[in-house]
Amino acid sequence: MSGPPLGDEPGLGALTLPGFLREVTARYGEREALVARTPGDGADAVRWTYSELWERAVEVASALRACGVGKDSRVGVLMTNRPEWISAVFGISLAGGVAVALSTFSTRSELDDLLRISGASVLLLERSVLKKDFAAVLTELEPEIARAEPGALESARFPFLRRVVVLGDGGPTGAIETWEDFLARGRDEPRELVEATGAAVQPSDTALLFFSSGTTSRPKGILNSHRGVAIQLWRFRRMYRFDPEDHIRCWTANGFFWSGNFGMALGATFASGGSVVLQPTFLPAEALELMDAEKVNFPFAWPHQWAQLEAAPNWKDVDLSSMRFADVRSAIARHPTVSARWEEPGHAYGNTETFTLTTGLPADTPPERHRDSSGEALPGVTLKIVDPLTGVVVPRGEQGEICVKGPTLMLGYVGTPLDETLDAEGFFRTGDGGYLDHDDLLFWKGRLTDIIKTGGANVSPREVDETLASYTGVKLAQTVGVPHETLGEMVVSCIVPHEGVTLDAEEIRGFLRERLASYKVPRRVLFFREEDIAVTGSAKIKSADLRALAASRLAGETAPAPA
Image (cartoon, rainbow, N blue to C red; front, side):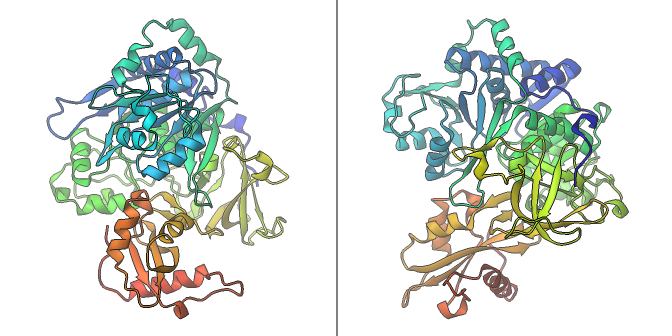
């Protein structure tokens, strides 16, 4: 099944990140593009217009040029949702580089992996995120950072990394230079050369490197073209049915290092001339205060965050009457001050490898049209459903593996030849199960792989299990996803202790918290006898049976799952 030709899609503009920012700046120059503030009277708020965002991006691009960044140089960005994240990513693209989006949930070992895989030559990072000091973490990983001069780092551990720039409190240390000193390096760069570099970027060039857990324990680096990313940025304005007259004010606390948040929150908002209300980390009560103070009309969150917002102590004290684009199924729509009835374009399907959606239907599509499906193929997209074992296309209505190709498909995984990723016809085999009906609607039916989708993030159970294997007393461990009302799936680790050993679930969770990102830590740890767990003839655990066993055990308990 194929969608309409891409050339027929309305609303597309320039198909590079510099072109996108230049075009929205030309349209909406003096409109507010973003605001970052703490709750209160707003005196401390940072507010940038589109023109100011363009200038801040040029400033970053100038500094990067002065540091030797050019076409295809990889520049890591390790920050929460703040204005500098946005100016950095667009600035990297203006300099012709590739922005490497790094998760602030990363543990020490995960950051080590990400830097090795990405091959970033420059790293722009926020020093402190909650209780993490990323500058200290980096220096622990590579002590040479504390001894080298800025721009002269030589590291056997990170052989491509030359420069580290820190945003936040604290002065320069060794190879680490401050954000202010970094920006000062670009002040003598000719502006016309910087803008010429941005104009020379081609749609087929690499724009972004995002990471996904994929189907293995190590993160996969996913290379995205400017064309693929820009299509989605423009497209989401159409999918959400936003208009410049809607004056979109989008609140989000989800990291832009996840493709969905970058494409949907930033794309839909900027393409329609709106403003993004930034919250660096998700704090429910503070989020509600921000929505009230900034008159947010488009909140962007995941299901588990809606539940936390509704449970916040100030839930009934805030005025959310500005909400117009809050999905009717979300908690916000149930708030006593909200009267809007709107349905987001949630009947959709996508992957990080396709920089979000490949199928979908626009906002407010009536039930008789969407029929609880995942929508229809978007322009330029072709889908096929194949037998997962043979790769042969199955008849309409028959379930198989979803395969996709189209203009937003990744350029490839870092370090993996493309012919090992795509099939002979150029399709990406997603590992997801589903079927196409006779009205060209896709119905997603679950995963053929074991990846757990929890709260909008992907968790590799193998990664959790490999970490558990090093815990004293664990004989056997397998992590599964159990259906959960707000998270989609809850991460649950099922453990068989060694004979005579007594293990404590909370101690195990504490052990994992030190080694894994918070969203990967199982919310529940269950203990079983070896004879409780069904195995295959080759001694592999039957994950489907274990998932059902874990769900049954949890259903019989009354204690709430720990956060």
